[in-house]
Length: 394
Figure 1 (cartoon, rainbow, N blue to C red):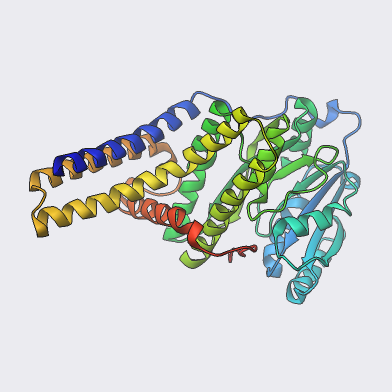
Figure 2: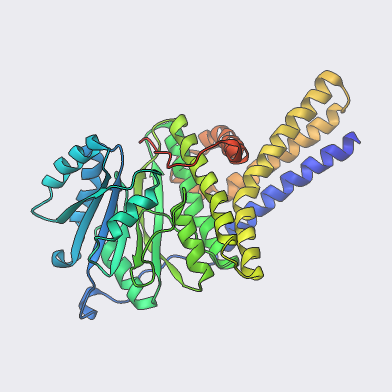
């Protein structure tokens, strides 16, 4: 029986390693991100674009950072408007937003929108309030603290027009000058450059992010309400047969300021994904699409779950081998070898991603602990009673 338990743990370790290897290899062979072949000189009538910036408990400097990136866009100024939406009871942010907007009034058409509907504090509620005032046929979304290239708006619009996409997203890299910030940066690199291309090419569902997101207003007249509204929007568009694109560009965003804020962010995401699964099934979708959605969730959650179970199992085997002596030390060494080989394989495949964020020596030490943290938060998120927008403190 002891040998059987160790064998099961080894199988779980092999499954987790194989799943990552498959995702990585598939993503390397697909071209998920695109750039438009058109340029602005080839388009006679560019559409008006409304950029919505929902802010809640934000500092002036954070809002200014995003407005600075918007003001640097090479999109015609007469076809670009910015809507900053603030909750009516968030007077501090309103004052900060007014100060930030004043700095850019000469270069941007900025409107302040007050969200009166603050009963249930969800980001989607604020976004929809602003959408009612948006004059553009294309609507873009960013958050405070976002930094992005000067051609992003133009290229997103051209890609929407050229490929007739309902929505276009991009990579969102989260970074901060700290150990945790570096790990989150690496994770976001892996997510956008390996996981999303894999999901897009296999199950044909593309998870979009709420920053650097552009939608056609004739297709999407409101954002679905959820704690993970961007993920729910992705599912709804896919279920209705709309195509979405990925722009070969990026948004840099400040990562959560500390581990508490990080955990709150992940709980919101995980709870939002769980909520979305229920909401999308209630729509009465077809069985084949329901299976694709289920596959999406399994592929996202399975690596973290397998890792957590493997680590807990390893600690149990170590205890039973060293203290209780139910397992032999040979079984423990066998399991240690399997885990070491698994980590070497994953780190080798991730070497290009790791080199962008940290050195390999640090990754060998820090990544297992970070993966364990992710697995723990993923598994325990359903137990946390959260129903509102958990603000990420940056």
